[in-house]
Picture 1 (tube, rainbow, N blue to C red):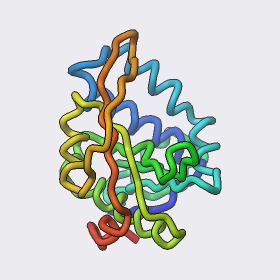
Picture 2 (tube, rainbow, N blue to C red; picture 1 turned 90 degrees about the vertical axis):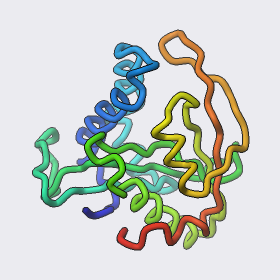
Picture 3 (cartoon, rainbow, N blue to C red; picture 1 turned 135 degrees about the vertical axis):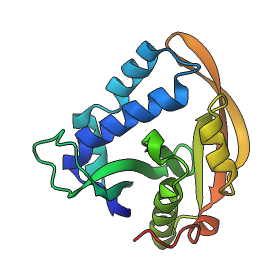
Length: 188
């Protein structure tokens, strides 16, 4: 397993990972239609390519070199299959780095790739001079909450969001980036 910088050609495969992860993580409390509509909007390949190309964005993928790519994108150049991704960037309105996306294929949950991606990104962000990172996680998302809890993130607030016409509580969590830099030294 390798953590690598995302490339625009990875967009279709990242969207596929997002769709599968969202259904597994949120399927018990969000409708399939709400999940698909959100993934279609938030993970449209053209939009993802723009996010990957933004200078102020750090976007990495976890690649399983032992698994073949799915060929979803004709420009795809990786030898392995993308099994996870993480996107973070500084938010002026929040005043620190925001981890906006971290997902892995459900078969890889608990394998350490989320930790490896987070450690890799934390090291890059500390080198760039940042000191804090925050994220938002649905309160009903036990997988996501346990991930953040196990990695030094602390709840700093709550808010409400709407998916598929239904309101859901979100937790705002934050951590010091320096505490995350050595959580997994396998990431390159």
